[in-house]
Image 1 (cartoon, rainbow, N blue to C red):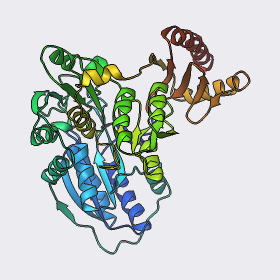
Image 2 (image 1 turned 45 degrees about the vertical axis):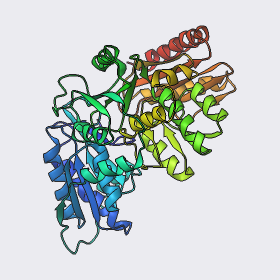
Image 3 (image 1 turned 60 degrees about the vertical axis):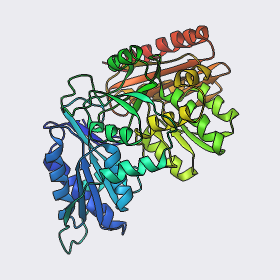
Image 4 (image 1 turned 135 degrees about the vertical axis):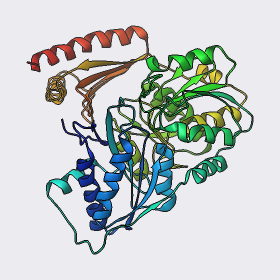
Length: 448
């Protein structure tokens, strides 16, 4: 299995990923920085996983041996680490994490100091080609803690005009280190759920998928809260639950926040090709110019930068709010939701009820890693002779007057996903039935 993915570097610690590997990555990052003539200081931080401190130490060793200076922000949330790079104007910010994956995994996310993702394959090529630059001196290491600056920055940017009562589910992950402080500093009444760090994620998986945050939903339903929020393992993705216990998807959050942003200023909105038609139509009506990109936060962030966009949305819950940061800090999502609530006379449940939502479904199929892209390509060729409105940006998407389907291979696991949305449930069932069979037949055909 290759640890170099489209968006980041990931592997099972001790099997695919270890200190020697990440030391070589650190040295390659130093080569990359020096080749580009960038400032010679980078920021390194890590999540709360058991293996993260030793991997961070090896990464720092590799980077300093390559001649760059390191500011080590230590064990921190994703937002704190990326803010540190932003604040210090570092050349590159590196964060050791496996995000929402199980405890035995670990990995690395690579950004410019501004917060724009650097493709891992760029770093892999430097390693494969054994590229080097002359090193006149060994880099230094300086420790820093910018959490107070991060909390104060957010406190100064968001205007929450009345006290809200929320449930904060950090899932025992890295947001435990920052999120409670942020919300309390902004005047929220905070009820904490799983807000003690535990690298084994004992209370729920680190992925805040609907079936994993049932405890949060239960607490919300039993209590008089304005809303709840659940973060993933590192804090670049969030799920929001309204006061009635309903989970807002990335599409619904994108529609809500996009409508608020466009109410202040018209401009570009970046969405992935798997985002909902209902969100696209709603934001277009409000004056948004919709720009579509392949699935992946890397594409969303980069396009937001290129197009000076007001908002970037990925259907999985990643979101970019460029008025604050270029990167996808999930803490911004509930803060923006709170701002929307307190700027209006409606609670979140009432805002949710006002959204136009079409029936939408995502179905996951298992498929061998070495065959999944073949399946998508084969279906693309087959569909070209049948359908007129076809897009091959990321897998194969078919558009109809009353709905659409997307078939795309996962970049990170042996899976293929079928996304289906339609203006009625009956039409969704029809599309789902037709293309579930087509996809399953093709997977069977190519699998041994």
